[in-house]
Length: 371
Image (cartoon, rainbow, N blue to C red; front, side, top):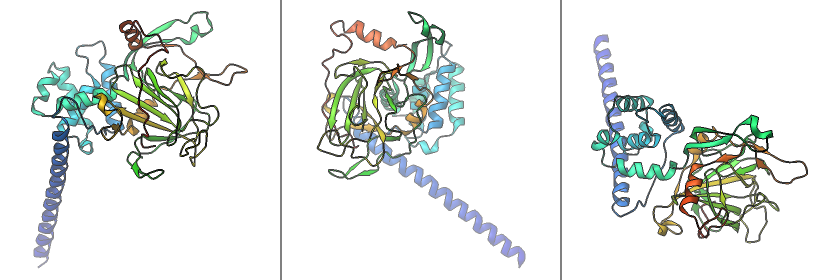
């Protein structure tokens, strides 16, 4: 009798495991089917109409290290290609991510296999490659930065580096906290999802340009308060910084149309917004609303076709590269400590000989951006 009960117990356990496995596979299949339906509806035209960017921090960090470690080697492994490949293999379901999957891909690439050949079996690899390039394309590369020893000299001496050239939105030495709040409900004015990441910090913490670009929006918005909008030089990204400080929101020299470098100071954390009257603190706590909009076609700049992505993991990654600041005695504003040269800026100015830094006519319609 005891043996029979034991057999029944074992059989019952096996059945439960089978049911759990079937349920898990069904869940993965259902999610993949849902993702496939979204993909099919957004990649049939001449440009991408939908992007969900949700690789975890661990995947971003690991892919970035792989890219940096293989720079100037054969083959150089692109972090964007790696992330796009894995996303295509997961049908966009990053909950399936395991570090060993990236290790296996890296080994194949190191042995000479080509990413395009490996990805032939994944229908949407090219979609993810284009989408992830739009998100990450300006954040890694070569740059030049002044050495510590040369800061006291009349002219700085630059050293060339390769790696994360995008900067944290908050300056070095200034702390902030954040959580995964993309898509949370907002009700001021009308009901809408939150289309960014709120970085909780102290009033006056310097706000930095994440990527080099053109300031296309400046001034008051009843939702975002004092805000800055910066369009990347390739036009694919629009960075939105909102709720800047009352009375003195912007750094000196910040004007609409100005070309700024990654890591330049653009303003200061505050709590303005949620008011039709200018210069009002309508937020309950000081923070920076940081948002990233993707633009594959100019029709996506404003309205129901806008594409905003979750930047929570990206903000965490950018904490690896924070720009130190200084303030001269008697001055109100800070300045970046280390002079910086972005080759993309140099190339942009060469290709746009008629455009001088701080004199660009590119404009961005006013957006509420889910603040």
